Length: 115
Image (cartoon, rainbow, N blue to C red; front, side, top):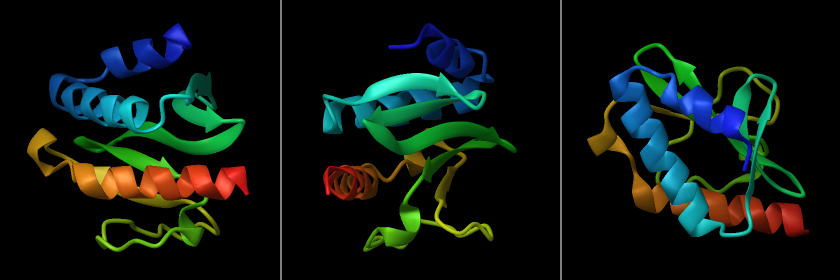
């Protein structure tokens, strides 16, 4: 675990921090072998290769999936912001966090990485 990643999350305002900590817990509980690193000025999550990252955005956070274009978004939560591969899940309130959708997207991402 990279303490700079945790410091980034802890430096967020209260609302962003509560969302980011919840999302981070979902990541760790869904992918126990995930490696948290601080890369490109954000917390990134790897299983050998990058899966997703958390970043501040407006009043909330983005959970961005590196290979999001390849994911089946059965819950229709991902946004495309004119990027080739990355897809974003924007969250403004802790009660908005779609736990089941995040778990599904993380599991799919891990399978893509495993080949």
